[in-house]
Image (cartoon, rainbow, N blue to C red; front, side, top):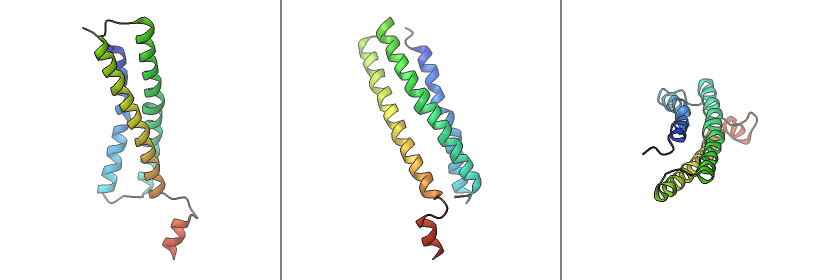
Length: 122
């Protein structure tokens, strides 16, 4: 029986940022770590990740569960709670990974004049 097909298809958008993550990996393997190209790629990755996974994902999750509660569907209760638990886990991981990605970019590209750059110059 159909269950949440509209929302399932929209959650595939979560993968839109994956190509930039793969590009980042390739730039590391090609010895271009810390290059301008990697900085641009990381900027696009962070921006797209934030828009798609954090903003869009959180909004669609809220709408999906609001829709289920107000309209009701023929979705069995067990499946509903499974969706809800899995969705909360994915969103929690997305927030955590976004935090880790920001920390990695800060380590890789410190601001000019920071203590890290001063130590390297000495």
